[in-house]
Length: 201
Image 1 (cartoon, rainbow, N blue to C red):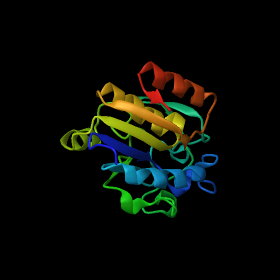
Image 2: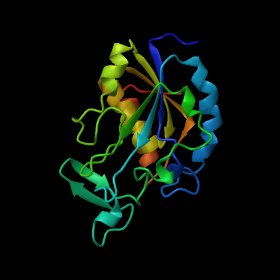
Image 3: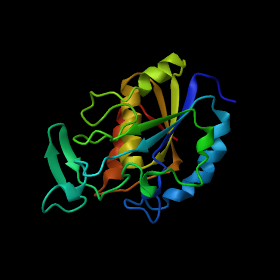
Image 4: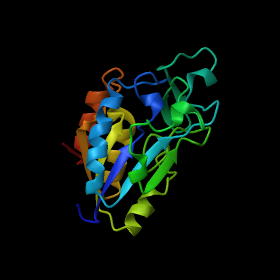
């Protein structure tokens, strides 16, 4: 058993991000068994869950003439437009049935504000609006975080970098992550994480 100062964060292992889903990550389901095996070693386990309202501003369908994976400028910065995914209450938004959700101590839902996307477990994409996760971890005495899940180059990356900036020691277990790799985004994300002292294992 790892000490109380270490926690596991499992990012967005949801149906829409797994094969057959609206925004499927290649082999996204292949990491689930390993994540389940890892969980019992931790005294604090957090799951994050993308939880978008219908018509979310990050959906290409919310912008006339825009195609999925195109870019627009939002008030908080550049935004990739995605296929509709992880809509609140939908099957796609549910955790993959193979994930051992019962081992989790906390679920952080993100992206539920219609006008702003939220990749990070810590902040929405304005990098200012907090999810509350930092406070939860501080009160639990957590200092070291290991991140696994989907997708390496977006929600895992943003969560790891934000955690490092907040002063947590961050580890990303790449064997238990999978990426989208949109126009080289995976290599760019790995570079950014290293530059922010995230340990890629």
